[in-house]
Amino acid sequence: MSWYRIKLNTDDVVAFKHGEIQNTFEKRFFDLGGPRDAALFSSSLDDGFLYIYFSPGSLSFCKDIITAYSGEPCETPGRIGVGLLVGYHDALDLLRQDQSNCADES
Image (cartoon, rainbow, N blue to C red; front, side):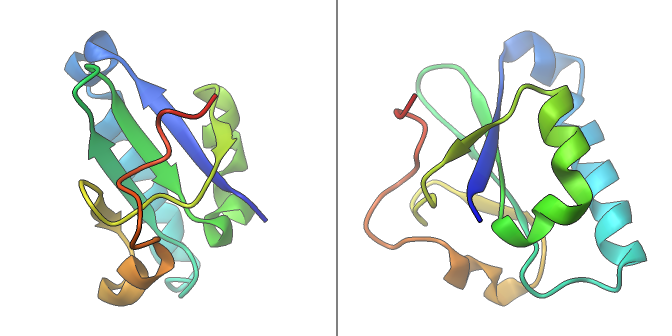
């Protein structure tokens, strides 16, 4: 399974779409008992976009969110500049240590 990301522009952030995504993810995450392999991350980049990353373990309950926001598959993001939004503290171990993000891929 792949990682997925959603790219939000400034207008999306002002409209609090990132908060809506996080709140929906969090509710589903806890409703399912907190799957250990599911996590939600974000990173803010110099290009003016906010990226939301979904771990492969979250796809079973978040594919509709990813589709609704035109999410796309990406490489595993790196730890630098990426923050954990929802998941267990050790979810950071799911991230790569050698790269900051996968935002420059298309």
